[in-house]
Amino acid sequence: MSGSDDVAVALSTASTYPESTAHAFAWAARLGYDGVEVMVGIDTLSQQISAVAELSAHHEMPVLAVHSPCLLFTQRVWGTDPWGKLEKSAEMAHEVGAEVVVVHPPFRWQKEYAAGFVDGIAALEESTGIAFAVENMYPWRATSRRGMEMYLPGWDPSEETYANLTLDLSHAAIAREDVIDLADRMGERLRHVHLTDGTGSAKDEHLVPGRGQMGADAFLRHLADRGFAGHIVVEINTRRCQSAEERERDLTESLEFARAHFRVPAR
Image (cartoon, rainbow, N blue to C red):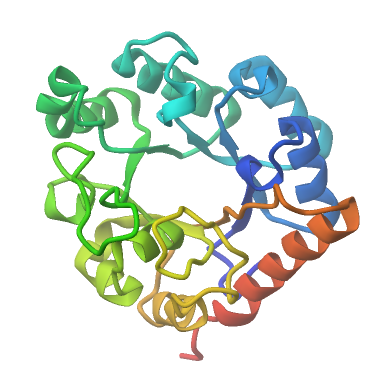
């Protein structure tokens, strides 16, 4: 377990893409992670509640969160109705024992969905008992500093009334946000962290924590100091790894980074 007995360090299945969800569970178990966040995506295993439950049981690896299929390339996963996707995500969370569903704000072109999003998320939390932790996104930009708003009601969920929030360090890097300031704005609503890193480029880099410019070490210490009791989920990009050994080094380094810097101070 990490520096706090109450805070688990989990592995997002996105961290081992393009390997399958099954591979991600195996990596998490072998390297000593405390749990898994399932990214529901184009891998058919990730879409099957029974398969995810079997993987969790086989590897004795709890599912701590479900990431709803709300990315551009998962627009047709579990149908095209965005509310249906969230309901299915809650169903998976219930079946596998997860407490959190991670969800992105709607895209600009999803105007009807966006119009009722804030109230709809609150209603879903009330009806399902699951925390829908809305994730910080970023303005879309090419090389200029000025970005285009592609999310409604906005890319910064701290400005809305959501009860639960996710903070992703790579997304904050694109938005050129100070992650400690962002965490403080989120306050007690910060429920979930995607631990990664970025350099501030226009790309969603998802670097191994410590290899970017976001001060991930200081960020984790700040969370520990203020008594954060949610989940820390390693969500890195290992697609460019040339071998299983290189992927293992990145996954191990990320886990060790989280445990080294998230330490609850002595009382």
